[in-house]
Picture 1 (cartoon, helix red, strand yellow):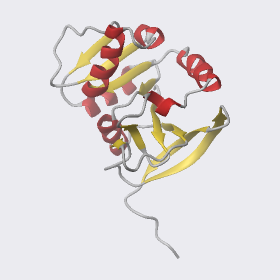
Picture 2 (cartoon, rainbow, N blue to C red):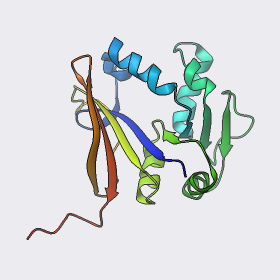
Picture 3 (cartoon, one colour):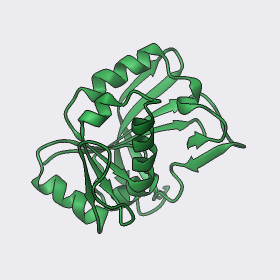
Picture 4 (cartoon, rainbow, N blue to C red):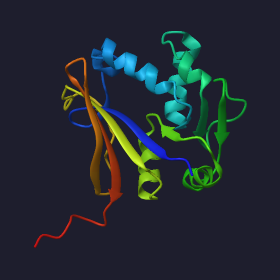
Length: 189
């Protein structure tokens, strides 16, 4: 059964974007970009929601960003608002319940699964107990006034066991965890 990893980038205060800031808060560096390229070389299926799809497909169509590695990957977008044919190569549309579809992909598939962006999708998959790993790269900026899309808003309580951690370019912190959804805060003796 393939693993599902929720892959997240956030500011220190948990926002996935901020008004007026460039992508990656303008802080991506050579070591981080090299790691991204190596990490993307693995074969997996990328899962996303409609909003993330529209964002990345727009980048691809405009040619502003080099998304060739992501374009070449298998991608699944979950949406009841998009319609086929989708413009971004190697992308399959799944309508209906994303949790049921991912549960089936994990049971019947052979490729690892990863999310990109898509906070609502990630929250649903985590709450359903389908997430095997959570990996986050934290950028050293607080965007309290301009932050948008608080990634962890609405998530259940989750205990995290650290599997791996790394620093890129002397400032970006990557942490990988095994998540356990909790019913609430742990009891204290």
